[in-house]
Image (cartoon, rainbow, N blue to C red):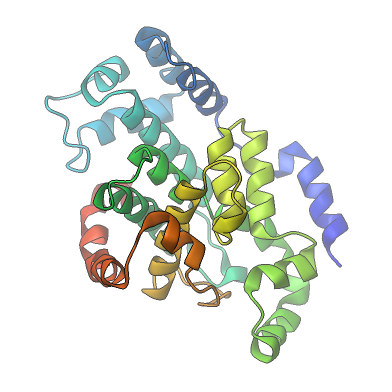
Length: 284
């Protein structure tokens, strides 16, 4: 059992994926309804990499700013705080998710592509079904579901053969195998990471329960949206990892969102278009 080794890593803050302190502070400020744009711009500008990303992406075809954006403050004024928050989180997530997860049999580029596609499809579902969920929140939630895998990936080597045998013989859902060998699922690790980064409770809830949306206690509707988007992207063959296609779409998620078989067909057919539309974000 590798649980004690995973515990050591979880206790040692230096061994965990880090996120810029600016990101945590920006999220904190944005949770207040009366956020001051000038303060927010000053906070974001403390991190040169995030500042560069905000300006670059604000001017990209994906975000289609109404006029050229030259500063963080202009980005906030032109695109709004929600969109700039999305860009800040995108930049932070890219730093963490652009790693090879060879033990999960998924490459860095594929991990980033699939994370972005889940994010984009989540926000598209919200718009299509006119759900009472913020599309920016759906995007961000979809983006972060794989972060726990980054931590667990480093522990696979000694048990890789056993896991592969187990997968062949028992056809168990992959999170059960993670729990069996490492003492944690990647969802539990994601929860630990997002709490450490002071992310909002809704995001923590989604990454913890996105494979079992009926267990969501904060926002079951948001978790259901991300659940469906995740399964569709995996079934389309993008970002499919060692766990394969073992999770069926939850009936609870379908009833929460009102998504029909016809909707699923439509979303599935549009995945290549979604990927084409994400060109700017794939290359940040």
